[in-house]
Image (cartoon, rainbow, N blue to C red; front, side, top):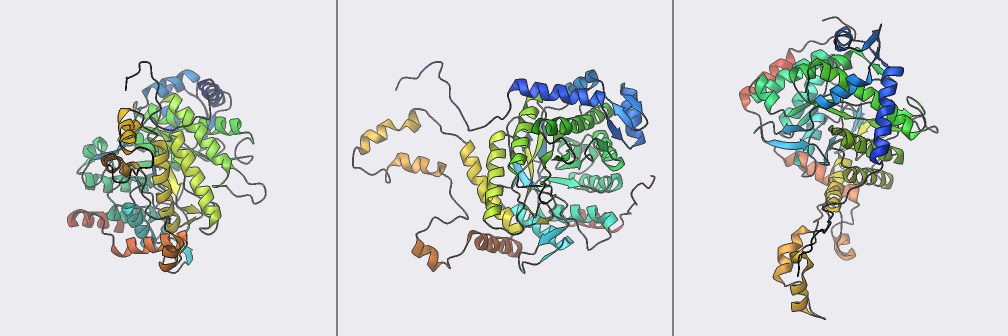
Length: 488
């Protein structure tokens, strides 16, 4: 077969919601809002940093000139790498259209996979969750899936991080209560990495902070952002906003509000340390007017975050997204629809670091059955975006001629060489009815729950060295909590 010239090929399936012209217009509107309206910073050091950089500061209100925003956009790292905590291997390349998926943090409740009881999250539940995340092949990183509440709450973040690092070698996104909690978690990470410089060179943790919409950077969030920049560690800054509640009701208005908040954080990060690794993002959704919930299953969430991915790609800044979650109170048909739709759309949009897999009840309860189901959906979604390879080998003309009409391709060498390209299910049923019935006639959720329990009972994560684990335990046991607003 003759090779063609000027032949255009799509290597993968991807989608765009916004054109480049629309992205530009949204960014210009956000920069206008950052100057015309501004945002409030409640941290003295942050105000000093921004004023020194040339921002207009009046009390807590900060207005950022467009030229400063543009300068900071140019200094942002264009890609961020997260590593394996045991080996230092560089695993997640957060750039371009690379899409990675993980769990979410900070749910007050969890669903016990053995008793089906809904209860407050504990050290054990976070350890179980992390173990499940570690075992699943399509889950790329870990967040806690719970606020540990069987310890003093002011130091709960240290206990969460300890349970995570003991039960996985995958990268961890850590959400801390305040700057002191973040400082302790960084110390633990430095112990594991072998020092401050080693952690900076091969980070396996990513820090997290978020503003309070609309337009407020609370003291704790700003301090965590500044600390992350000073340490040179990847830091996510992500607004969680509701159309019609904490942002305008229009989709474009939501994006302007969210970009104003996220890019204001980006400016603080870059003015603290030029080139600091910064990840923009958001959880943009609607205020459901019938129930007043922050909806994780609304189609608008998927639409807005796909649009935000377009803006992030336009700016060439790593992007933090959301997928694999549901508003349903149980893992039922609704949960499957909402989680699958969000995963497929997010994967095709190319948002980089996508969290909240395993969220149910509009983000209040973690559910490990959903995590396992989402892992299967992720495998399917990645097959969708792998595209269709078209070349002389895959066109298979010689094989078609060899088999001929009425033949059978099953025994052909070409089939053996390429059949593994098809997605092999690990969870969903494709068996004949008689086989399915003889195996118990189980639903997908029942099969997922069995897998969760099997992982918890039998999966063995790669352990930390005993001396390192002892140092982590000592730091956690001696952690000191601070009341909100307490001075250094």
